[in-house]
Image 1 (cartoon, helix red, strand yellow):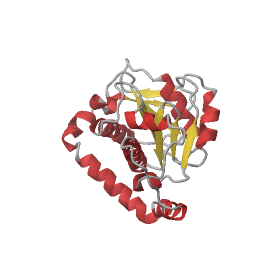
Image 2 (cartoon, helix red, strand yellow; image 1 turned 180 degrees about the horizontal axis):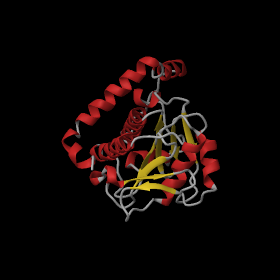
Image 3 (tube, rainbow, N blue to C red; image 1 turned 90 degrees about the vertical axis):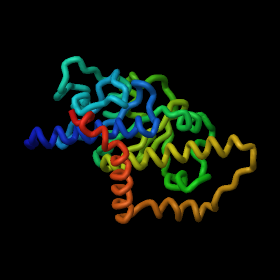
Length: 247
């Protein structure tokens, strides 16, 4: 295995801890449940210490594990892995090597849309980002069974976002900034849809041609800069917490 300095590996933990704090800032938490993972330069991935609220997550709460669930490194002795978190994230990291960060949420709007038969509708610009680019996975109960991993990654395919029926959302990215911007846009699209459906008015959608055009506009090199700018702006909102989560 290639050598990586402890400084570099600690920076990865700090980055993931910041992501947990951001999800708390944007109210995308479910007490101690749901999870975010980040692939390490070592080839393994970090996931959180189960039982710590996202608002209090620190770099020391990040546990490095492999895709088989073996503990590679932990900064604390009394640390626990969420079994469902391991099943979901290990499956995606193993199948989609390019996706370094995976986010799973249980938000009210996300679960509401996951229960709707037609899923995510092309009602807003946020939703059009994922037009014909959203995967769906049928609910099988709490994800404790490792045999579900094969079906989960088959359903995900080559998309970066997936709606878990009757359960919640998954968003991933080639880096932590991309994953964050994906979950923000997907969550906002779900919020808009729930609000729009509750108005009792007849809804309109753009033409299929415009939907596809818009989705394509969210791709390409220029978007990488926008994604990083957005993520940096979000990090500035929790700048006062930096000394807390980098421990």
